[in-house]
Length: 569
Image (cartoon, rainbow, N blue to C red; front, top):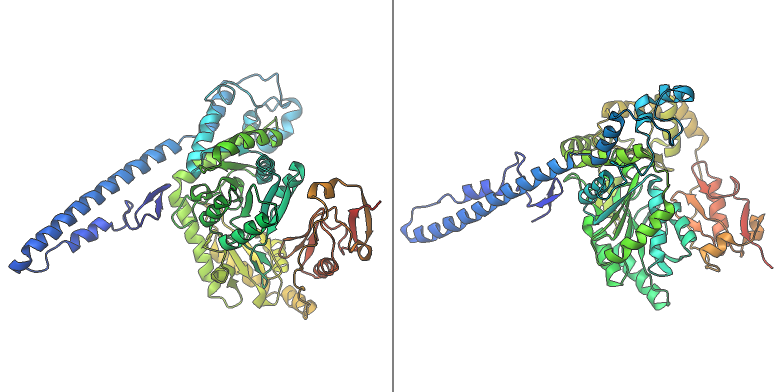
């Protein structure tokens, strides 16, 4: 029953205080006597008495929830770090310190000030200033505490090197728990970087793959349990688990179930939730992973939550590993953070947090816009909504409605071509594309013009250029099945840092790779440093690279004709 969220507080379904009918209202109607039969008078009186008590308790719950919600909104209306910057520049300081522009439009800064505005230069102050971030219980500390509360975390770190910094930080911290880690194979390259830097020996669990649309989704609790059990049986029990939710395409995994499985195997759960920073701030959105048992959550706040590009957060959960992880994350954060952290970026995180907590109505309008876009496209037979078919995958338990993946294959055109043509002809930018689809991302609080989007799509797919593209790509060959990874011959770190040479593809078969190569679609690494290069992998990568809708990230050349391998002898 306790499943509906209101401003981050769990309240009973239909027990709302925003104009929706309350359970108490229906209870009062149900309590009305249905008959005057003397034999039922005592029973009716008892029922009415119980119902009145129940209604009274529910009314009290409504009042309590309302009070809690109002107090939370008041608390999160403030932006302590951003306000501290305002107080600093209000003093009109003279800066004989970095940055060199001095916070003014004088001298060489004239063009920069004209381009960005002088206020941007004034706000661009260095770290370690009293009244902002220097003293104990500073404005920055207050902003971090509010962010942790907003996402349901024990502690939060502000990051100005993006979710990539969060991934590297998480990997380095995880190494403090042990050498072995179990990761979703489709992990972002920044996490693989962290694995290399930390000297972790990973094993992998593969995500579910939509082979039709070339999309990698998530991992089910059952698949995770099987992978962890196998790792234990082979003597490489995982000290931590890393999974991704949501996916690039808006599919959401069972984070609570995954956390339960990881904890049962004695490992914390790290969730790359880079694409879900807005989760937990509206009833129609999935819950924040930190509230579902995740131990560390990577959150790319700039992606959909409104902060500036390159800003992110790392959230520490309240689980059984919190105390041990906190010290490890703090040390790892010191290794990955800049000592010249941008104050403007930090302020944008503070402001975005406040806007999310207090902006449920605006987020609701974004949800309505995204659903309207789906409805319009469902009515057009040339387009299909990929997320309508998420129920076919056992790992997907929810959908991020602000991500709209659109299958355009019925038009006879590739998603890549459609996306590029929308940019060329209409200056309309979709987030990404696959061979079959394009993905729209609607930022929390944004309401793009759905009719204009549909008109642009109609124009592109019915254009003369589209006819020419269909004729040119008719009979395109489908990608071969994705092969299994080759055997690990070295640790990723040794594979990456070993002495290397570049050889033709035919000579690379059976050798050990020094690079990571991932075919798109679906973006799952096919070869990792330290792994053997197989004939099947070479064939697959070359087939993808030769397709008009595919490419291979990490390849030395567009045709994957050469490989970087560990030198022998």
